[in-house]
Image (cartoon, rainbow, N blue to C red):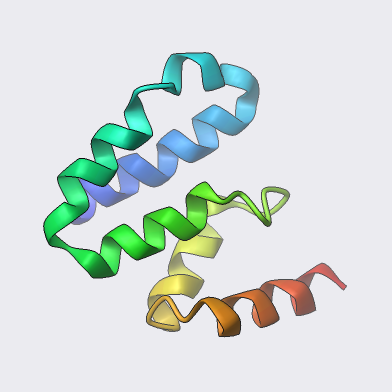
Length: 83
């Protein structure tokens, strides 16, 4: 499963490089695949918000893993890194 997750995070990086039109159907399909894993689905949903898109999505992914996708703590960490 880890290899697939890395691929999904790479997709966000790929999309950030202006290839977003090719990604239109990708994210809804991945959310469907993650339907049974609420932990990873919530992490992916947070990444899809692209709130901190100037940061590497891998860094954000690992922060979310460490914080058990606690969105408030995540925003606090990311805002501190932004300053």
